[in-house]
Image (cartoon, rainbow, N blue to C red):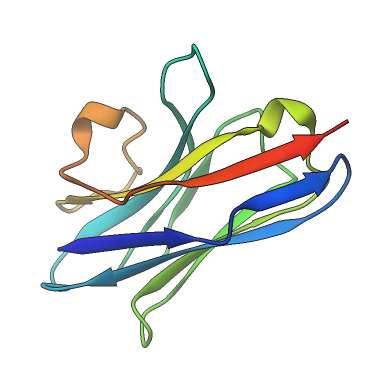
Length: 125
């Protein structure tokens, strides 16, 4: 499985961005896609996730109400719509996949088997 993250860029505080994660390869069965981010000097943290089959979602408290994750099963993509961006949202954003039947999206990076290359989001104040 290959994951390709895109959509990052420079935006002013209060602005919006939409990240996309395109999956290719063996896309079948039960799995979840998560978005993580890593700021300089900080650990990688969970942002949002979605189960592929039933679309159950999970969000970090810091992004609830501002970020929305969705999937397009026909296009094998997962999107992360980000609004009301803050300087503290600045980070490299990664999408990742983990196989398994989950009712709750895993939130720890070590749970995930496949990772995309990351896309940089910079929010200026």
